[in-house]
Length: 382
Image 1 (tube, rainbow, N blue to C red):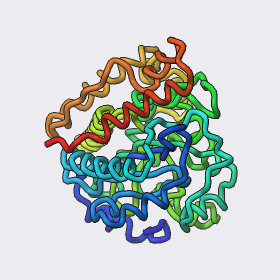
Image 2: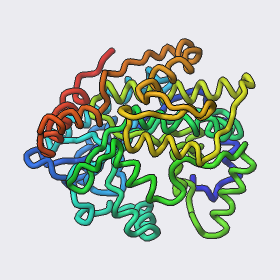
Image 3: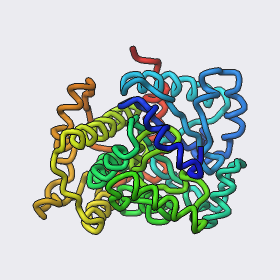
Image 4: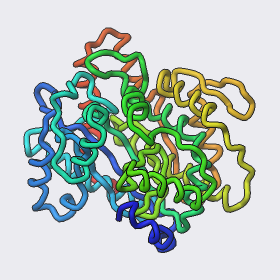
């Protein structure tokens, strides 16, 4: 369904089940010897046709050297993770048998975006025609989570409540210090490259409900700014086809354990925002300019920096956001059985530790690729 079907959006959400979960993970396709980006999506897609599970679970994402694996609709987080682990195992086996390997960082450290072919689909041909350089430049990889929401008005208002949470999730997920062959000095170069370049992207304005959001989409359609709702690339959005709230702020994770933990935290945040809304918990809606301060700090320093308590106007160590979000989500995590386990350092911090120890760019990336191979290709856990 495209955004031209706005009259049916209310029904789509009304038919959705609350708190179902979908997970989407994007990987770079690499040459196993050089770790250069390898434009082999179409080959892998065709090779997957003999696997009934896998052929329904992989999709392309803009460039031919990127592949996405999707869980489909899980009854809850645990079901979605079980589905995703099975699909990962099949994907990594297929990729290895095809003579390639996969990476899971927010950016490729040195790839030249000018040499990456766009995949040949109607959607991405439209994206390229509309955005040109902005599309060509976007060689990035991320983790998205969907949570079912049984009312579109409620979904929009949950998105509003998640706005100040997004920079906190980004700081935890930061995993892309490199871009264009150099250390960017950032913890999430992916966010700077994508979010600050694409239109209708980043932290959205608050809408207050479906009526205002629909008017915004109708305005975009009427002015020929978009032709489908997926051209609204906000870091959190109601997904009209699935009847979900989708969080899109996070970098891809080098370790499967981190990806699982981050997915669990995102689900918990969405579910807690919905519960707070349902129970009338007061919410102070910060101005976009204030949330942008935390977004920049998350991009630049990740968990090594300091974030701002927007209600009190004071700084605190970014590392504290893990405990902060864990405490906020205790009620829904207890109800949904979500446990959180994060390591001492996130992806960007581990890469920076290697950089500071004198490792080369190639050595740093090779270490992340090996971590990805060892953790994502594991057997299914019961």
